[in-house]
Image: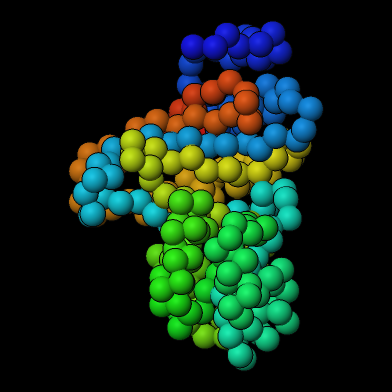
Length: 241
């Protein structure tokens, strides 16, 4: 294992081997942010699920009340009336011709969220774009709310994507890794984003899961030390710190 640098060791010394309240943990994540850039505050959640089982998959979206602190670039796969609606609604790019689709196939991925009209999904599969977008987490998916049925729904979908709509999905080890904002955010905003995420995760509990669902929660700023959060307080925000 590579030895951590002096800056990391200095901030890591501030973190005790204990479970902090969400408020304390998020404040500590801010205090242990040491990078020259404004780092992202991340939440890591260990779930009591078996990702190999279809009925224990955890995948959903959450709209963070204060966004992620960055500009979200939205691309929409649409044609005709829907393409016009997407442009009018503020989409950063619209893939409505073969040239744009080919450009994406060749590696152009200058966007953060991809939305698609329902009728375009077959084209994405046939064109091979799914193999390009899927591994990068950009493939539109009905379960994630990134497939739109009607042009009338595009303004809402684009607005939500730009406002702080975040998808979370359990990985092969039963963990979630989700950004909730920047270390420069006011503590109250980080707390509200954190609570919105945990509420969404709890609501996404698969019906087949028995016993404890959320096993462990931790937070950290990018490259910063991990800070353990009291799980009970994390999923019960009304509990006093």
